[in-house]
Length: 570
Image (cartoon, one colour):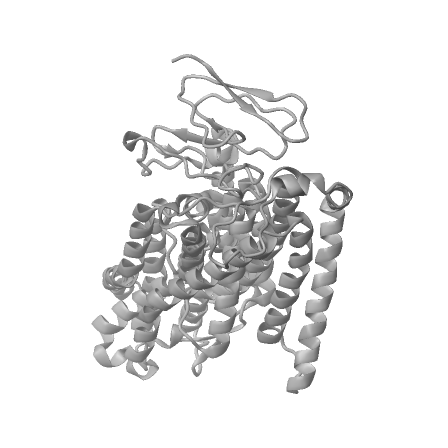
């Protein structure tokens, strides 16, 4: 095949930059979108442009993002058409290719993580100092089971926070992983619950297993192993599944087989399964409305950049106020709590306003003094309906809009990552702490105290899984459902966070993973049904339905194996 040139033009550039593409066909949905196959030469002086490479097996770079400054459909980027023989997504890239590092470096990182995982437990107080060798050995094995589950949580669930940011180009994959690593670990250590119930998630009836410590110990370890196994399978194929549902399915399988039908709270299980419908539907509806609001009140404004800069502090005020009121321990007096939440929201809005002025203030000043570009490149009408298809801004106005929402998306991703580390680490360390208490004779009552070193252990496991396999599910969330830009990504994240926050406060059964997937779909639906890849959605929904039965099946098998082994050891 002959070499081709891809030209990227910009309003601020006097001459186009050339990019050599070898051994490939070239597909240009818009003049500023370049798709590079096989060999690439860095593009100079085109900071806004990101490249997507497509190989013979689908996405060669799941971390690569469509340029947030590309022009298409007035705002984003058209979906990339690929021949049928190039749509296979089974061959996912390795860690080296995802992070643009050598295979030797990737192998060294993996070896270091493995060595640390096997060595760190020897320095933990939770290993059981002063106990006999047999108990220490079992404690060591228990800690490894917990690490395995935490590793898979990092590989699968962290995409909830960072997937849309990577997909929209607001963050590179490397930036997302490094940022999430710090925030996930900090959240797990600082906000992770220090108290857990021996019967996780209210699924099993505790009295059924009273006096059967060995069986309960085996069941808890089996639940960790079973949930981790299914999460690993799902992560391999890039399916975003709920870690909570994995644990629930595992414990249901264990409870049914070894405790009978009376060992399971069926009402709790019904609430969990209902979230398969409630979560994605609510997420899709909310993101649809948020994205349409952005298009109606920002894109159709005479100066979209100025409108985006004005809308961002308002969104931050609403988000921070709601989060502060619902999640943080404010005053027990309602009026005082509301005042404190409003104060937090005001502070957040002021900070974001100053950040925006620092980042794109020069472009805002330019757009204020030169209205010609705004009049030429934005579509505004006095009679635009809420559901109307509105052409978006271009040039400097597009850069301002995406710059503002890109910053907003990074902030929301950081918050979600920190919150995820504090919340979902309990899926791994809860059963782990309960198993250690049973093994070391510290089980008393229905509550177990979780030591700080176990919280840190769970945080380390999440970070390790994110670094080694996190890119797989991030590719699905960020690229394979629908094409994302900073505005679309922000709409999805803001909608998902709002739904989870409100639902949690109202006690509705909700899954953060399912909600975010639904929110990403809702943004796609706002652009048209054809903007959502139906095949990817079918795979994801199927994985949700299979999660609980798969976890239950693995738990039964692992419990049978562990009870046989423990009968010889104990």
